[in-house]
Image (cartoon, rainbow, N blue to C red; front, side, top):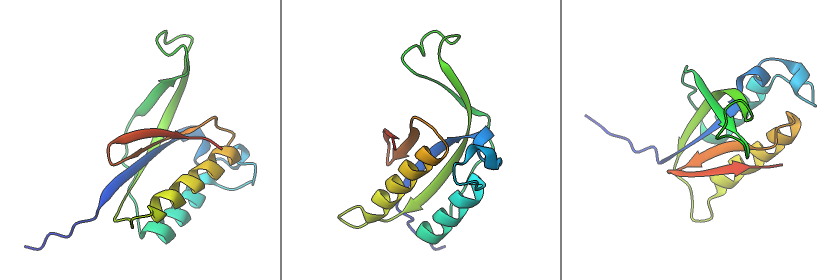
Length: 120
């Protein structure tokens, strides 16, 4: 048996409705294709589990009727980074650009157990 360490895990969430329809991209791109190309080129691969991920967001999230609601698609990558966190920074910059392109206020990102939001 051989066990190969893959490093730490980063995962992020993108609204499902914006994944396959060009109308949600200011660049006129299919967002799933853009994400796929970036993750394969930068990290050598990724996974996107099929799930019913959803979330309530915003200052009024305690009252579900007043909060913003999204159904989300999750993307995950595992990688070993250098001391300057070069790959993590590349992912953060990509997500900030993606966020602006699809007109989202922020994108949720977890890296090694720490949760953040990425804004344009």
